[in-house]
Image 1: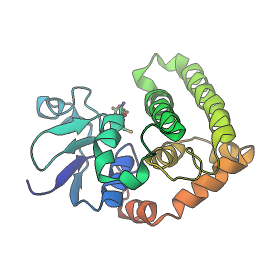
Image 2 (image 1 turned 90 degrees about the vertical axis):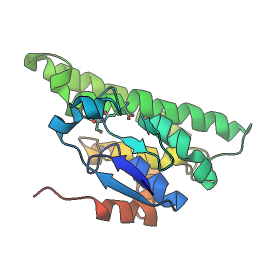
Image 3 (image 1 turned 45 degrees about the vertical axis):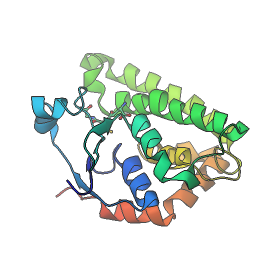
Length: 204
Ligand SMILES: N[C@@H](CCC(=O)N[C@@H](CS)C(=O)NCC(=O)O)C(=O)O
């Protein structure tokens, strides 16, 4: 293999991998395994959870879990990382982990609710997951200045943009969070985001 390969899903968790590959100026190909392919032993040998994203590296080996991939690609995107040992670095590491390990799963519970309980519990599961993210968006609104790490745009902002796309009520998300709304507009207009979104396959 001569370039990176991403296993992804249109507009899903592989967006952050594509954002970073573009920011790094690295060549990649991408494919979109369906539920059946992700359930195979072959795919699960790449990612035991059967989920995307997975990044296959040209020198051999692969990385799965979006947080691990963002951290792995950081060396190719130094402009998206805060200075080592700065206060911003502590914010970056903490918020990025919160986005990946708390907010992303809370979206998963809202959009793949069938994996979390019986059908009559869906409304409650969704509402509880939504409440988790609503409260964390309030925290993020307070933090933004204008980016997560202050004046510097980092990979965490791209990650935040990605997960915000999965919010069920985007009008409500923005209504009481003007700094967040402005950051999301900035990110949406970013050339890397623009190009990545334009390249996503559309449903037939
Ligand atoms: N913790 C994982 C979560 C990955 C994840 O939930 N991926 C979703 C797409 S956004 C998926 O593959 N869902 C398919 C399924 O749950 O069946 C990560 O950060 O990479």
